Length: 315
Figure 1: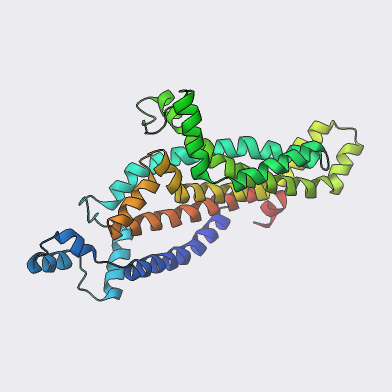
Figure 2: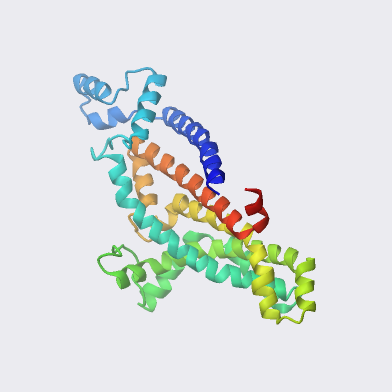
């Protein structure tokens, strides 16, 4: 198992380097000059020259990239051009907010999508199957921003059951924090639940026609035990992989939902950084997000091995 994990990490290293080159190159292609934005309206030539020298913008691009990567390896992602705050510190403040939102959204997605997919596969061709598929397609089709606005109008404005926006740290007030996060987590979780439902249904349909499931039924085992212990356990592999990828996608792509519900997470940070041409922050966020995706893929590979005895014997 250890050698398997080490091999995956060695494969991930060149991937991260390639991503860093891609991120750095895209930043250089973006329009606008951050130094001019920092220099203010007067744009004193001495101030501009000082800022370019301070942030090493006069160096050749390969030298700038090498300097940036060297600092990133040491944990220094640069300074925010707008707030003069370390990028890693900014990310450390905002990332826990988005992780909490993503975790709650995944709880909604897995709690709805996986049971619905199992039920749809077991009752294939029945009314339950058709209803589950219609609900799944609806979840994929409804835009997050529209669902979020409708929930705010109904749940917060009309019924006054939950807060419409804002954020409360979980450490300060756990119950209030969960209340504030319920609606945005549900908005994100519904679309993911639809995706999980479709993949769970497909995996279960494949497994339910296998020989070992027929053998388990022939032994006289209860249908519930056949489905949950024999069928679902063997169908978990693609579901685990998809869940890991979806969690990474949530961390990277909760921008619109965070804007609607005024959540000070990763999404709001990257939007503010783009609008203010704070390229150091944009680079740091994209790099951290890419590393997060790679880590989630690594965890999914490890889960593969733990769930599948044949893979364990090979590793």
